[in-house]
Image (cartoon, rainbow, N blue to C red; front, side):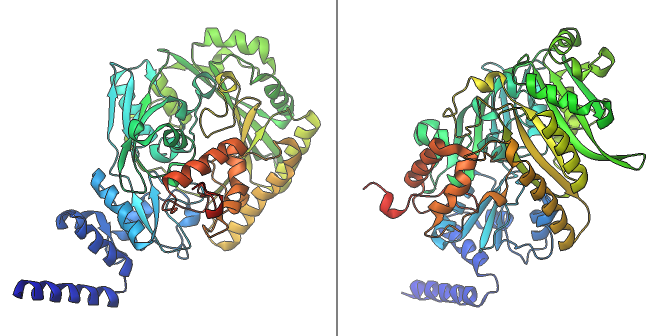
Length: 532
C-alpha cells in the first residue's frame, strides 16, 4: 500500500508539473517515451525542447531555404533525433496518441520547408542519425538509410566499384529519404529512368508503429512510397536499391550561347531532338538573364553527361544537334564519380571525399516551380520568353531532357506519372540573398509572373508538376473535413488522375486517421466514400 501511495504521489507531481510547464508537448513526449520503455539516458539524448541549448543548432542544421529560417518562422514544440528503429516507432505512436503533427526530415531540401515547418503545433522527427550505407557488390545492390545524403551514397558506391553508379540527383547534400520517396531523378534519367525505378525493397514505420519491409507492407504500399511522397504513408527507415553499370570513362561538357550567338536557334533545335537522341546522352539547359556591356540579355548554357567517350559522343551531336556546336575541346573525359563532382560545381582537382561533407557551401533564400513541355515551343515563343525573362529580372529556367527509357516505362509503374510524351521538364528557379519580407515578395512575384507567362507552352488539364520541386502555389490542404477536395487540386498535378486515385485509396487503408499529414500530403477518402 505504501508503494502505491508513493507511486501515486510521484505521478501526481509529474502531471502537476506538466500542467504548469511552458513546454507541455515536450513533457508529454517525455512521459510517452518513458511509458514505452525507452531508457531515460536515451531519451535525454534524442529529445530536444525549445529550452535545450542545442535546440536551435539542431533545427537549423538541415534548413536549406533561408525563407524558413527567420524569426517569424513557426518552430517545433519538440525535435526528436532517433538513433534506432524503436525510437521511430515510439515517436509515431506518441504523436498519434497526443494528436500532434509529426514532420519527417531527412536532408531538409524540401523547397517549401514542409519537412520542418507548420502553422499548427508540430514536432520534427529528424532522421539525420539514420545514415548507414551498405553496398553489396555480389548482387550490385545497396541498403541506404533515409538520413544519408546522395553524396555519401555516391562515395560509398565508388569506394567499392568504379563501374557502378546510381541514377539520382546532382546535388550531393539532398537527403535520400525525401529524394527517393518523391520520385527522384538525375542526369542518367534517359538511360536508366527515375531513382524509384531502381528501388527493390524498403523498411518503414507505419501509422500503427510497425516496422515493415516490402513483403510485410504489401505491393500497394510499396508502390506508394516510390514516388508518392513517403511522408504521407509512414516514416522511411531505409531503401534497398539496385545499382546500375556505368562505363569506366564518361564525358561531360558545358557550352554557353548568348542571345546574339544563336541561343534561340540552339534551344529550338534542342527541343526537336533531345527526347529522341541517344539514350546515353543527357543535356540540361540553363536559361539565365545576364548583363553584357550594360545590355540585358539571356544566356543559354548546355550542360551534358554522356555515358561514353568523346569520340563516340561527337558524331551523335554533329549529326543530330549541330546547332550546339560541340567540339572536342569542349569535352572532358573522366570517371563517373568525377562527373558527380563536375555536376555539383566542384573543380577538377577536388577529391571525391568532399561528397561526405553534409553541409552546403551556402544556403540562399529561394523559390522553385515546375512544368512539363510536350510540344516544342516555336522560335517566336522562345523569343518572347527571352524578352520576358529580361523584363522580369532574375528568374532562371532549367530544362531537363526526357525521352529515352522514360518513354518506355508506363506512367502507372510508380506514382510518378510524367513519362512518355514529355520532351523536357522545366524548373523555375530564383535565389536571393536580401533579407526581409519585401525581397521575398518581389522575387516570388517574379517567378509567379514567369510561370503565368508560360501557360500556353506547357502541359494542360492538368498542368503537371513534379513533387520533389515542391510548390505550395499549386494548392494546399488544411487536413480538415475538406482535405480530399483540397488534396485533389495539387494531387492531380503531381500524380495525374489514375495514380492520385490509387494513392488516396492506399492512404485511406494504411493511415485512415491521417497521422502522416502535411500541407500537400495524400488525403484520405471522406468517410462517406469509404467501403465498409
